[in-house]
Length: 359
Image (cartoon, rainbow, N blue to C red; front, side):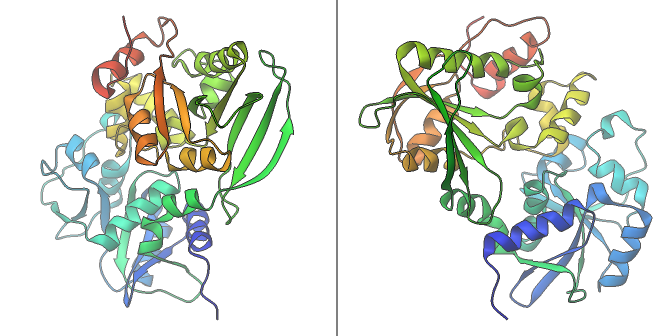
């Protein structure tokens, strides 16, 4: 039987994990069976126990363990066990992003250890699935009908998917503020998530091009949420590109700084209970920003663009493009007035994430 394409193997595992099924993650002859923590039910836990050869363990990010106060070390990920086993209430509390709003169960007796590369791959797969970054794991290979994926393919998925992007379609799309515009779609060879480029005017790739890297935002871009400034930045960038004659807006499928829409809504709920936008992501178990800008660099290369004037307030974007061999000849500020709903959000981005705002 032929070896499956690494990208396709990871995509299949993502699909299985999202529907609550078991997935086998392996490295050579060593393998773990994993179940997404947020899909946990008594039935799923029973299946995991019957399928494995060890007691279930919870693997989670070190960030999540830190904010819960159960670990103060600097680990990428940790494995949590208990001499008497982990019960459902404890697992839910440890993995649930809204644990700060729940009654805290007794946590005495928990044992935390560094997660090895195989266990860390399970956390990464949960992140790629846009689920909470926590999983129940047991040792064992399971049955032949369980989806199987190599740990190294999980670890390299983001880079491989970005490098596999190809231009698959484009069409003229007159816009409200830019009638001379077209939308170009890019897709990796496995049929995974698509990214878009909005081409405004007649772009000259031999000169520095005005470019905006815009992460998709359903709430801000589409339904006009006032909790962020994304809608203003999206429409404002297109209008400015039209005004100066041309530009490219890359619309990246990285909702919620890369954590996905559902997790972003969870972060909003935490924010409504007193957390700021950065701390909310940390309580979810994610880094403050999970985005990857290699897809953006690859899209620009496919469009023949190597030098840009980047519309951004975020110095990380400037550094990321430079790291991926796209020259940023100028940073163009991209600031819009705050409102009563997003003023704190913008101040937090400036104070904690280094965004270049003036208040």
